[in-house]
Image 1 (cartoon, rainbow, N blue to C red):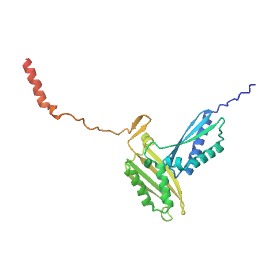
Image 2: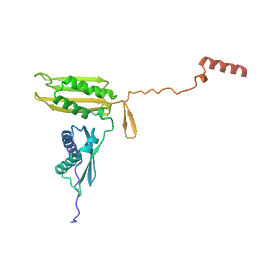
Image 3: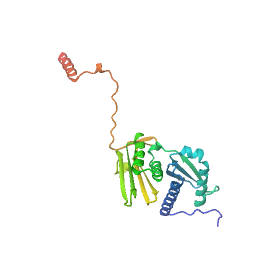
Image 4: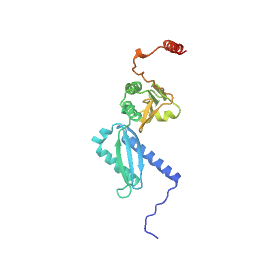
Length: 246
């Protein structure tokens, strides 16, 4: 028997389940740790020798400048939890900025709204402040839902909408950013859900993806108006030329 290390082939179904559990646990952990920095998702790229974890954060510059120690601590916790090492299974942690304006990040706005509610700001005032800031930056629409005991002992759900927001179909997954947070108040838990539609066009790699029902009308070109001949005069000129030929 050879001394070479045999690689056990993992079942495809079990591999998908393991990857899903890994992403879910990592996403939940980073949401708690990097909530105030505007954590907005991860990208995991795994090879046979290393695993790269790209963390998207709204305040990536502040996290890289003042939070380098925190990034090293997070990397150390991930290595201990999932058994990564520097020999044959290395993990690399990178902080990436968002592909769009961080004012349109639903996760960052949800954390901001959660902080406002915990500090005692009235619900309507806090929500209007968040929605106004998003719409002033040029968003198409924003929706905020608050559910729980906001006032009194009776739990209720409140929905605030500003602008235009699609709610069905495949474009909802591509153009609407969602975020859900839970705010633990003294009277009970309050649920926060924010949906932001930033534009009808978005850049995907080198291409630009457009909403299916969006029609863009371009400005007319600058042309010399004196050279434009009206239709009646043009027909008379053609008729005169035909009579001369006859």
